[in-house]
Length: 313
Image (cartoon, rainbow, N blue to C red; front, side, top):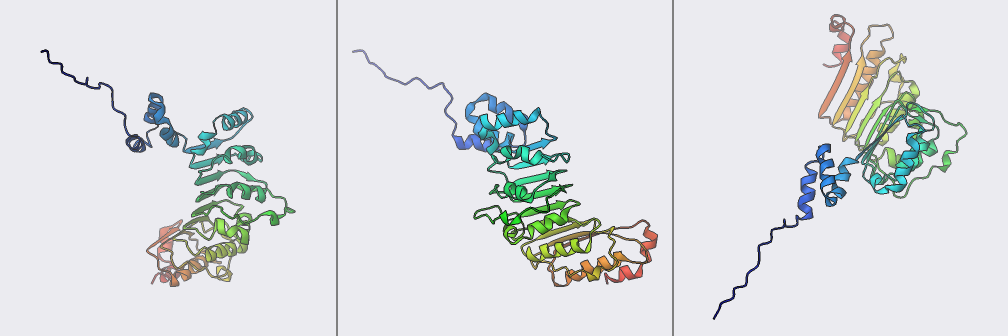
């Protein structure tokens, strides 16, 4: 009697790779754009993960009439792409209409956590508020070289505190027209978004007025959650009496504090007044890191500056 043996042919096909393994591999390639592009072309199953990294940074530089229609079409035909960016940087070269022209694209970036406005013109605080408050996950805002051209008759009562808006943790303000922005974020309905959850504050005090310093004092006084404060270019200040400014009250939880000063041996001695203003704020703090940068034209002159050195003893 003939014996019949039944057997299965070995499966020569590649077994299906678990999605978790694919995602883990692609996550480790997040900074290798060329490899991510190659992976996207190999298999459609890779694309949902690779596009998160390929399109995570959005950069608009000097928008023109050729780019605008293409950007608009891309927003309509590929809305999923605009859900990928985590960071957006707008470099507008002070073109007045740039923000309003790209708002339709920005409004599609529902996962944005970081926004940078560079050399951009702000025409309306209401418009700026509508953009920022729409990013529910926004935690980082940087203003660099921003110009404010505002209508003095604008009705700021239209600005309403969002029920479920963003809460900034990092705020960098390096703008000559920061006074207008400070008055804006100090509005009661804006504080929850801009100030009350801050961890990191980076400011530029180039050539400040008495009002500028007072406004910054108000911001720091309200932002009690700040852990890192960096004050740059606190010099070229025309104020002869820094002590007349309200005291700087540092948050109790502040861990890192940095500031710059410019030494000049002049009669008004604004450098000494500014130094006392900053150092007086340290008496109630629990700092772990203090960085003081003093710019001196001649170290020989500064080395003999007994009044300045006495403040460190």
